[in-house]
Length: 430
Image (cartoon, rainbow, N blue to C red; front, side, top):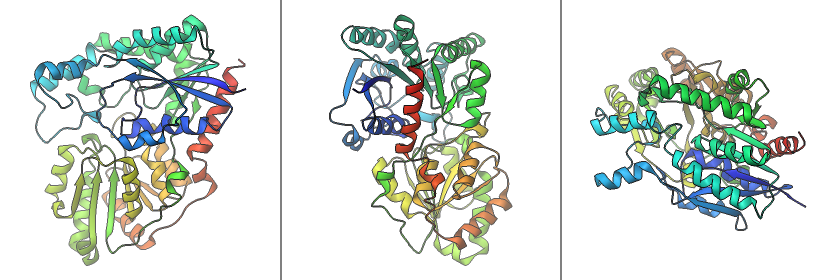
């Protein structure tokens, strides 16, 4: 008989973007194991990006508990008569200074909505789960954040029921990216720290996506923290092959914030198109995903605008096709305190394409570790213009490879699900 695991997540199809992929794929492959997933998701959530095509990947027989959610920013936009999101994912801005309204909303998000804007879902979701448990047996429970309110729902249920609980951290909590833009008070910071510590110590087990972040959380938890990285679905690549073309095509896929703006890269490319006829005539820069105005302005300042192909959003299935066309795929780390432990979700799909990967960021980071151990490319420090230039020329000459070695396949969603199953099997016998 299958064991049941209750999974509490916010991002779920039709939500698009990187945050939905992790548990959509885990659920897909859990169905093939001795664990049966039961999803707890918000009804009518206020997602920043939609991708209806992902609905096709949701198992038809998946049990789902949908709980209505109050979204404060949607309510505020309705009052203000605005249909678009007030605070974008990743704080992507046009090249204009933030308006007073945007500043007020950011301050409110940082100081009034702790831990996040989904805090109003904690109580109703807790009640719905406890009511569900009156007539249904569950062997284990998983919460995935951000938003970290998901952990507080699981905390409440765990306190009442003692159901074994795995807290999954896809991103940092207290040391979240863009924390400075929330202008948090000392009180708000202390509350975040208290809640994070409470979850880390109370959860039966904890996992996160990188080795550096695992060590940080172990120092707070006082116990081991599992590393359960993101990955790629091998099925997505079965009928996809690298596409040869005449262009020297550099591609970046995903959110591109101002804290990733690689000035040294733009300088290196500007010099290459001046010095090298092949690069001048054949280079293209493809950016797919919300991109900050500061990044686009830098490209223009370095006279690279004519080489740019920019698309704010493309559905995931189409993104994979575009990735296969790139000779060089770019991964650029955030320049903040999380850089060493930052492993972007797209890096695993990058390595699965078999195309060259140029990382820009710390050579000692966990992302660099993934690139190095999969023989996918090279990580060059953020300010090393000459190193970036050299790497670009080497990758152009090297061309495409198919690095489907055992290390790469270890990051397949199917193999990672086996690791998740081992964690679940462990926590139910503790």
